[in-house]
Length: 82
Image 1: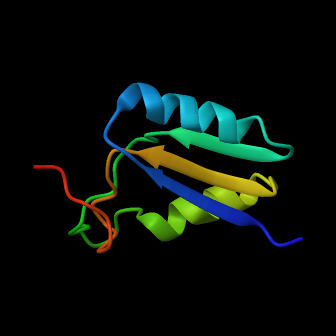
Image 2: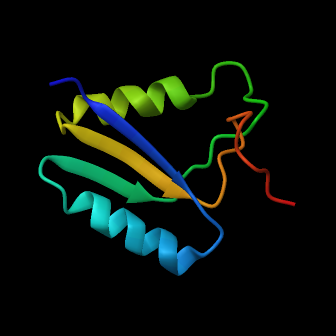
Image 3: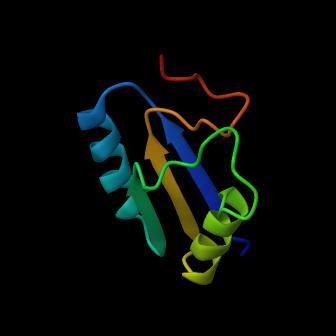
């Protein structure tokens, strides 16, 4: 089965933590809440970015991997914090 990536977004930190906990309880899942460091929209050259984070997740061997956070600055479809 191919690995699934889940990115959850929301405004309430308590609900985000609960969502991460629920997702992490799934069989063969590794889901974090607001994994740091946050990846900036304009990543300086040579700095690790989303590709490296996805590679780290893939290396876990979990069937479901992901993170939930208030925003993902690198994602053009995600709302931005103000």
